Image (cartoon, rainbow, N blue to C red; front, side, top):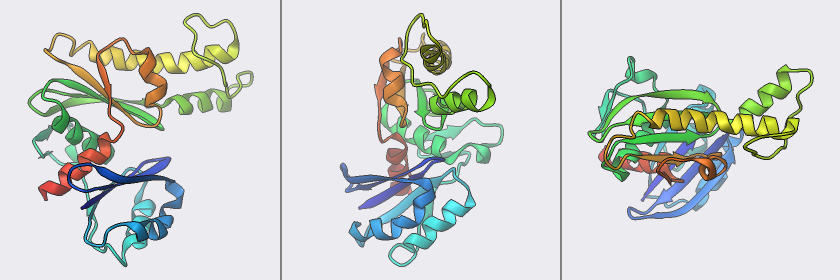
Length: 239
């Protein structure tokens, strides 16, 4: 048994994997990481815990403290030059976000072709992974909700929009909602254009905002809800 924990900026997602499939999963607000002490009461005693964290040192300490009694030896994924068949093309490999690194590891285990790995959360990351397992680089941009909040917080006349996606928006609410979503789609599809000539190239899409983006993509894609957790399990099994 293995337990994977992905501590993101907004959500902390966890899952229990029995070696073949996910048998239990849950989500907490990242600010409530200490609640893992009660959540973990239902986790199997012999399980190994592997985690990644992009929410800061205080969150990592809170997770360690919450699990210290039953799981004192957490395995933390840190970005490196290479692991699990994936090679890190970042100029400073250790500076790549651990969640992106986990997603790349998970993606390489899922597909044998060139792929675009998109994690759509508080921020959206769009990363290129070639068929040989080399991470060639990628984008970071504000996620949909962060874009909406930025407009509302930094302009006098634009509200926190609850509009709908329209190809030709004719009101301010729809214009904001459509603009934020089009920015995500445009970044993803523009990056995918560099892979479009590669046989079997595909986009793997994960994250809380993935269902909002998926209906509008005009590229081959696959939803992969547990991509980061899958990568963590693969990493844990390799150690």
